[in-house]
Amino acid sequence: MHDMTSAPDLFSKFDDIIALREGLLATGQEDPFNLVMEKVLSPTRAICNGRETILLGTYNYMGMTFDPDVVEAGKQALADFGSGTTGSRVLNGTYQGHKEVEQALKDFYAMDHAMVFSTGYQANLGIISTIAGKGDYIVLDIDSHASIWDGCKLGDAEVVPFKHNDIEAMEKRLRRIPEGAGKLVVLEGVYSMLGDIAPLAEMVAVAKKYGAMVLVDEAHSMGFIGENGRGVCEQAGCIDDVDFIIGTFSKSVGTVGGFCVSNHPKFEIMRLVCRPYVFTASLPPSVVATAETSIRKLMHGSNKRAHLWENSKTLHKGLRELGFQLGTAEPQSAIIAVIMPDLERGAAMWEALIKGGLYVNLARPPATPANMTLLRCSLCAEHTEGEVGEILRIFEEAGKAVGII
Image (cartoon, rainbow, N blue to C red; front, top):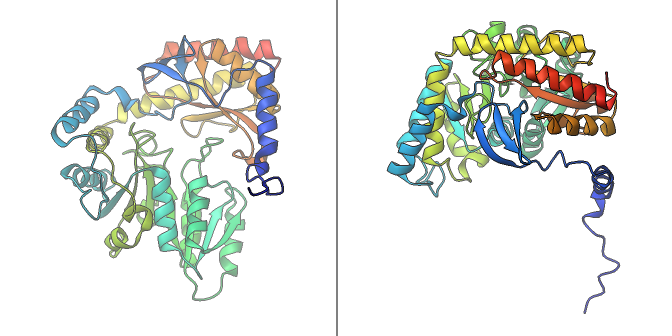
């Protein structure tokens, strides 16, 4: 028998977070990170912990998850093509549906190339790690999504972060990069923690001045922001200067998967050299069918987009008037972040909301900027005016009960 007592426990690095979680749950608090949706009634309502609950934390921005055409397309594909492809895109995993969803993306963005991944996380992981490798430089916003950081790590490029949304800081970093090195600037349209947008027109112009390629992650803006729903790039008028747009199917599109669109003439080689694309099974036929149907409908979603903006403005104004501290002075997206004084009161407020029939996201450090605890609200185009009123009433009651307002 080996003596195991002296061996280091690989779990001991998590002791602090285990203690934090146990401390929260010891007070009888419902676990905010273990919520179960027992039944989903619509894009805006579900049964959670036995109660009917308004959903205000799902990224289901355009409410496409129960669209009858989308659901029908998924059922049909399941019947016609079975439950999965059991193979990679470069082997047996490209079905008719995969070509069709890529065509829908090319039409949606009016771009030459579209490549679909099995998740949005994999899209960032794959594209970033493949185009920026050893000896190349990636200049990125410090508040970038985890999948962006992981893509940088996987590709082994030199990573140069700059202060969030700071154009001058970004330029300073670009200026210092050695002559002749490959450069990639990575930005997001909407940052998911505070719901703020990037000054893309200025940033893309600076990146181009220094000869860098630009990748913009539009996960939280696709479908909703911009005249055609193409995101903040479209709204800022710089979509033609961006080399790669990354997006996901798990937000406005309403299913799962990730993608990259580009006009780069050599882009198609990515299908052979991008490891997270080559070495994973492709999306099931039912998923690509729902995604394609949803994307084509989002091309005509201007009424929904307008209603979602109304919802966002109403909720932002209402929460501010109640005395809550918000992440942005004005609503910039469908995300409204309510800043909590600390994790304990944030968790108590989350629990008061869920007991009142409202689900929001509790976001905590280290995922949040500046160690903030946030209650993150993501609105849906299917929320009615009445539901937004109800949301404000629940927030007011909970806020007073917990002593936040």
